[in-house]
Amino acid sequence: MNIVLSRDAQVKIMETTVSNAEHYFGHFCSILASYTRKTAKLRDKADELVKQLIDFGNTENPELRSAMKNMAEELAKIQDYRHAQVERLETKVVNPMKSYGPLIKEKRAEIKKFNTVRNKEIKELQKLEKLRHRAPSDRHMISQAESSVQKASVDAARTTQQLEEIIDNFQQQKIKDIQKIFSDFLTVEMIFHARALEVYTNAFHGLQDCDLERDMEDFRSKIHINTGTQDARPVPATNVSSNTTWHMSSTSLASSLQRQQHVDDEADSDEESEEDDDDYRKRDYSRVRK
Image 1 (cartoon, rainbow, N blue to C red):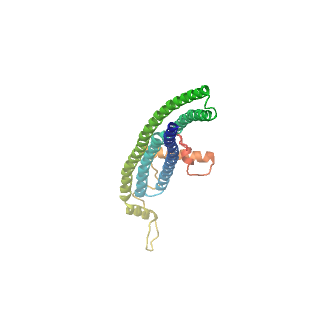
Image 2 (image 1 turned 90 degrees about the vertical axis):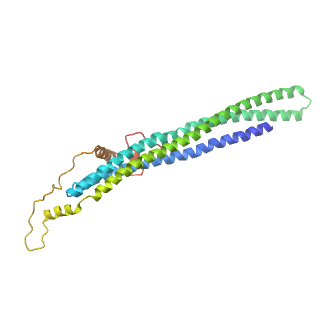
């Protein structure tokens, strides 16, 4: 009976290991899937900002228009990086977490199988104890019961050893996977933020270099502000007209606008209410589900 109790303690540790993995990996998967969807949502909102910057810039004078164009191009680059970030998070982080669902079910099935064998051993031991108390002189029946106990014990010992190896391998795989998954998560984030910081810096300097006074001169020349008694007359502007629109000189800018157009088209056709996760679910790349 001491052996049975020892096996119970051993299997309890194994069950706890699997239960903890099920609990925490489930939460990790849910949180990281939501994190990825929110990142995609942020990308889509930034694409919308790019489009608005372009539309606004086309209504302004040359200096500000050029600054808005440059800023829109830089922000569009960042959204290309963010798009790659979303895809990498899904592939390298969320999907490996999701794979632990079926894996944990397999381990639970192995534990259930062991429990069946263990319960059989306990029943045989209980039968033997009852027989020894009720018919201590019936050596034939006791001998058969002892034989059944011996067989059940051998099966339980073999199953315990198999389960021990299975859970040992599971634990080893789990700790390696958790290290790799979160290392990949951090790498994806570092790559994105390193590239984004460089582009944000360029965008910031470009915006600061904008000669707003030159635009004001152009604006004043068009409306011909005059503080005297002379009638205001239009004066030809030396700068390019603010009605001149931009050509699509940036691949990132084009892809950003295409993504935004895709989101707008989907929103118009589906006529669904806006929720935090909707834009990500409507993307044309593979989806992450909780």
